[in-house]
Length: 69
Image 1 (cartoon, one colour):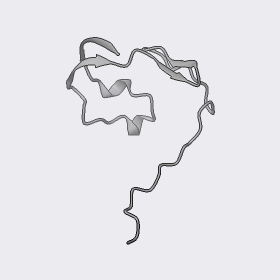
Image 2: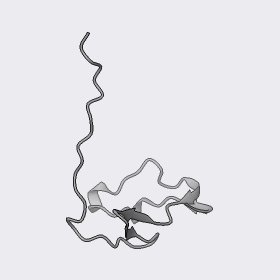
Image 3: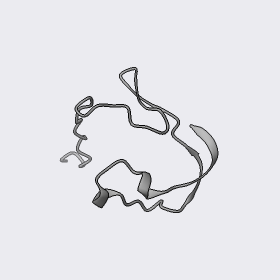
Image 4: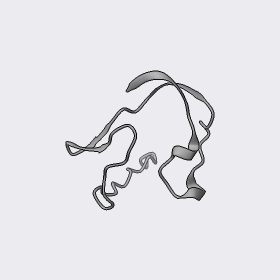
């Protein structure tokens, strides 16, 4: 984490233009992500996305349904 005083700006979201919405837009934050690694490889340096398309993989979530009695 990079400590500091930041205002979240949804225009900086790296996604399709119609998906750039966040309930955090305009909120003040006390920190932000400084770097992200994927399998020991730097993919986000705090300012730029360094990963290439297809470098990740989809991991489906597990069901949160209660087990049958």
